Length: 293
Image 1 (tube, rainbow, N blue to C red):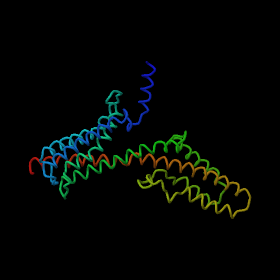
Image 2 (image 1 turned 90 degrees about the vertical axis):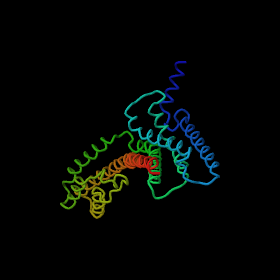
Image 3 (image 1 turned 135 degrees about the vertical axis):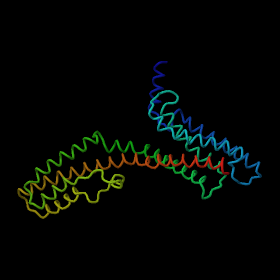
Image 4 (image 1 turned 45 degrees about the vertical axis):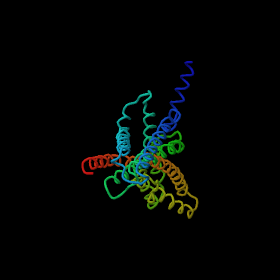
């Protein structure tokens, strides 16, 4: 009996937050959406099936209260992350509820609006909510897809070890490049001093470094080697090219690592500020409805 419980706990520990408790929160979200849909159908029937603003109706008050409460509760996930528990309201359960109940807001808020949109604070709140949800969906996708790719790219090498290897290769390049002529040595020195791994936001997200000094040195020196006959300088140039090739491969791996890590984080720069803007617009929506409608 004890072994069975341990096995069940081990399975639960490795279970994705999307599949948590056999999709419990997905089922709850579907039921909640169907109930809201039934309420909308009932309110529509009472209005002779004419679409109109439903905010002042019994359905509007109920769906609006549920939607606003959900938005505030969903925004509390950042606070909840600070507490780690393993009970029924574990962080995994909370995230699962966050995802599926957040998606149910599409149904709740859309029906609450009565499909009536315009250039006003009410539609702004709805648009911000949809942007928050879409950015959250993007976050789910990257967290589902990128970690395995990140692990495959990194292998058994940590980011720190990649950087240490690049630094070591730079030291060896400066030593091996001494027999080269002044112009060729300058290319190697530039490749060492102008090594860029992260760069600006675009470079971090795209992984592209068009002005890479290492790639430029590798290209120019490879051309020089093809025009050079065998000799002591050719041997030194072969060693430099071998080290540049190894450095280029390590740089590519490090840049892919930075790119994947950036993709895991960039969606939060949209999701969190937009959530704060949504709460502000939601507050304005509620105040305007109760005091100026």
